[in-house]
Length: 178
Image 1 (cartoon, rainbow, N blue to C red):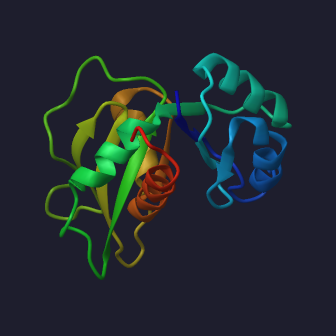
Image 2 (image 1 turned 90 degrees about the vertical axis):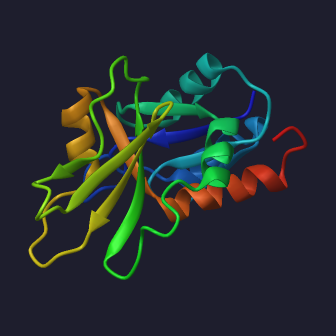
């Protein structure tokens, strides 16, 4: 099966520093493609999740959460584009990947800090992906990941919608089955 890998809290500030491009090169036998500097990878070769997880963990000089999604889930999400038309000049679309699928979903949408002064609006959950909007406001301090982790009580990692589209494009270009 093909996968998309998301590392949590990699290369943020001075903590958990690594070289994702080097990790991808070292895992070339799995067809790993690095997407940027924050630990997002497309895995184009057929490999089991457990083998992939172990191989990536061995390459990291620190412990971190490794979220692994079937490639088809990310391609389908990008194709559906559920946040289309909602992002704009001061609003960014984000996808937060949970470490595990939630057993119970809260009533959505959820606004943080409040409905009338929201910085984060969580609008939908698809498999392990939590879709949200982030309104950039002066002195805004919230980021989707902190809200999602608290809400679902599980580790998570957040990427912009642009990253999800980039991942899906690579998967579509390199796959007959997706």
